[in-house]
Amino acid sequence: MAGEENFKEELRSQDASRNLNQHEAAGHPHSWSLEMLLRRLRAVHTKQNDKFANLLDAVGEFGTFQQRLVALTFIPSIMSAFFMFADHFVFTAQKPYCNTSWILAVGPHLSEAEQLNLTIPQAPNGSFLTCLMYLPVPWNLDSIIQFGLNDTDTCQDGWIYPDAKKRSLTNEFDLVCGMETKKDTAQIMFMAGLLIGSLIFGLITDKMGRYPAILLSLLGLIIFGFGTAFVNSFHLYLFFRFGISQSVVGYAISSISLATEWLVGEHRAHAIILEHCFFAVGAMLLTGIAYSLPHWRLLFLVGGILAIPLISYIWILPESPRWLMMKGKVKEAKQVLCYAASVNKKTIPSNLLDELQLPRKKVTRASVLDFCKNRQLCKVTLVMSCVWFTVSYTYFTLSLRMRELGVSVHFRHVVPSIMEVPARLCCIFLLQQIGRKWSLAVTLLQAIIWCLLLLFLPEGEDGLRLKWPRCLATELKSMTILVLTLGKFSLAATVTVFFLYTAELLPTVLRATGVGLVSLASAAGAILSLTIISQTPSLLPIFLCCVLAIVAFSLSLLLPETRDQPLSESLGHSSQMRNKVKDMKTEETSSDDMSEEAAKNVILNAQILRLDPYPVSNPALKQFNKEEANSQAP
Image 1 (tube, rainbow, N blue to C red):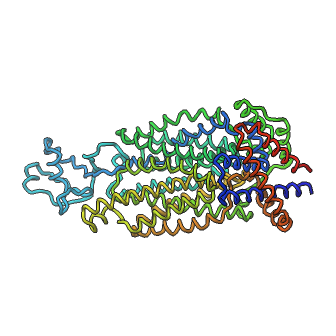
Image 2: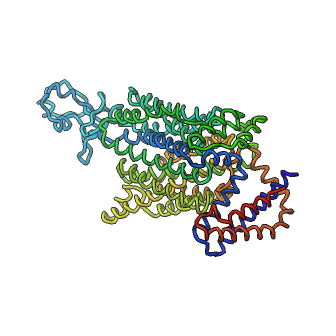
Image 3: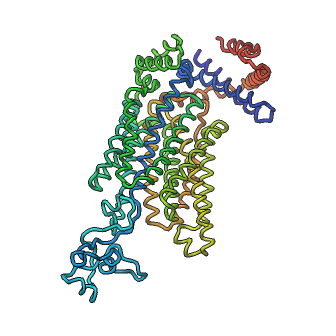
């Protein structure tokens, strides 16, 4: 009964907070300082419902320890982007010709142009064919010049790349003349690694812990990233790309879980936003390094060297205390929390530490099957999978569309990467003002608008050149590139909000597994994009982007808000809350008058508090705290 009365009091307090929000929205002229106070009051109420948030507050809400933890995500984020997009720079397009060095035996002083004229057939427009050659004949040079060669065949001795300024995978493994599809094979292999890695690392992170999962993924980045520089066949290159993709998605899943469980409130949002900003920095760094290096192997060597400092994370990375508690490892959780408090120069009250003994009696167990058994968990997973599938499909479609316009690979990477930083930083304002749910909806709505605009713009460089005058084609191409860039701008913000929102919606016991399952949809969307772009008319992929984005936008409105809400620890947490609300709905109707009075008291005390520049010594605040204490007494 006491627990039920406490829960009723909690609902009354929530109702007062809701009425207070309505009172603010009605147009009362409170200053920003009053609004900040009201947010703090709501945050305090949230912490009262989240015992672990009280512990983190005692440790130091965002002290030196948490700041160091956030900083530790920067280098892995940079290296994840570096290795993830590296293959975009190693398949540079180069025009080859068949190797016809046999003619040098009879004409050693022939120039390159003369050799091509004698041994390579020409197209009707006068250009040399890249995949055919004249068959060698046992003649002297004069006879060859006089009579010419007639019999052609495919290249017998490989290819030469006379215009190649850089050594790439294309000319090292001769990915030309019917072998171009291997480039798409590399992309599909990478996406397959994302698929498998999402599932494997989701399970590892929840079963073994956030710390070992992060270390395993970082070790994979170093080994597979550095090892790619030494592969001697294209199939081995595919294997290493497969390993890199698993490491990238493994780090994303485990790091988002660790940051979510160590930080509270807006600090959690800021940490994830900063981590994603450094992911964009990694893409920019990759573009600069790839542009300056003459050999594709050097690119992976540099990346491997830059990743070596990640080995130090073995000694400096902490485990998640929330995960330790859910697994019944109370002693380890206390040690981690006490260490964090010592770094922050704080002392945890003994009564808070004593509360950690309670979960030892029952260790929370969960499995993948719970995503089917638990209705709320199933709904969250399906909706977020739809959103992530849409974002991934749309992002890759826009990237491939930009490639069709003939935009250089360096421009395609550096400009959107630069735009992604302010896009992610804008999420700070959105998340603070309208919360997670509506931030996701707003960014998806922006993506819908840009995709709709693309339906009315030309679909590729050939379409521009053939259907429009040259002067107008240039303007339309620039406009199309701008809209594509703005579309990726909106999607970058969507990704940041998505990761934060998903991590807060899922319970601690299955948080990483849930993020992993949702990430399966991301890889599926990317694979579908690659397939559709290559096999269907160019307007259909963009139209599908619009349809999917509208569906994702609609489904996202079905999810609950998580701002200023305690993290769900176990599977029954949200279900218990909903059942209690349903049982006491009738009883709570009679408490509306009291809730209105509570809201008025909060506003009145807040207005008095605003007059005092030193709120700690303000008598209104002391009286407010005293009244709150009396009202909560049994």
